[in-house]
Length: 476
Image (cartoon, rainbow, N blue to C red; front, side):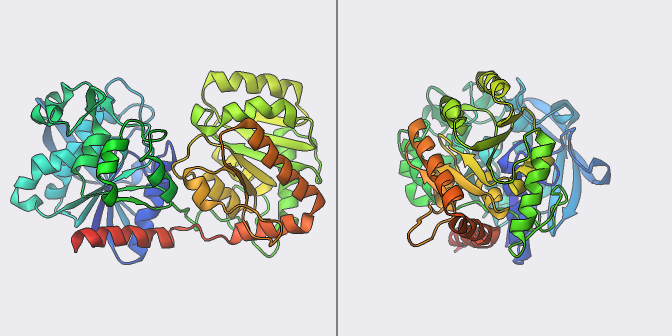
């Protein structure tokens, strides 16, 4: 099977969030099972290994009335072919997103993907689209390109990584950028909330819709989580599949991670994690205490991630025998109160307001527990990484957190972490207290938790099989 993935980012070349992790791992897992996988992304200024890319070709394409240059570069990594579409006006600038002309930039990208299929002779069986940046490929293909002989027969899937980001824009852009007739807006195919909605267009035009966990697939059908698209998703519910993301065990591996000072596996984790814990406490300026429960938080400081609960109960948590190391940056509404709390409790909180990949790996490898009380979480990778590194997750039961963390049962000694149900600060504090109770009073049960977490199968093997079942159902 030949599968082309269209995405705004993918590891190992460029990353702004979890989307890049998925598009760096899923094609690799499918390629390992004998399928031809191709990933097409923009050639950003910040692309890693840019000097090693192979020039392929160039051509001109139309974005509405605009005649645009498109260069194409290539790289092959882990059996996956990556193509990079180049236009310096759109992509030779810092970062990936957040510009006033993002709609025009990714309209160019959408046309470039479709043009590459024929110009590079890579027509796939499955064209897999990811998030709003690639969403308009679906109506462009169905309304325009599918009528050309060469393009016939491609099946489209669209994956929702986070339904909160939908690509809403002015309806005039339907014709101005995409050259599609206004009737697609007035008949509702691309209209939602009195604006053009790229994600809705992809939901309407794709042959199947997937999202990144079974629980999230159910949640986005409700008014609470659907972000205004629950009705149209309800109409397509029989074509909607929730497939839990995985993590790449080749790279997320405590035995080989170069960012971790003392590597370990299931046979020697207790000794090595103790050494890593001491090293981390020294690195982040916390008192060295091998007995204290060290809780890690690695997150974007935004409303989605449960920071309201954490800030609400942090003073209360400071009365416990506990240390926190927090890594992340984001909104001032969360950074400022955390700065104040950390200033008063420097002996218990290390606040690191930045993005630091190496430090995040050391937090996963060194802490005793990992706190992730998200308001919503389509899948989440941090809790999976923490489990892989033997750090017990404490999560709210939503989306992929519910699907990946099995709640601890002290009576039959099962489970891989701790969880609470409602988005409530008191519930969160109660489950943290319960985790501390097990940590201090029943260390043998805690050790069992750690080992079950490390042995949980959260790689891409099973998830890639589920994607293949969806793809094969469309081809059959």
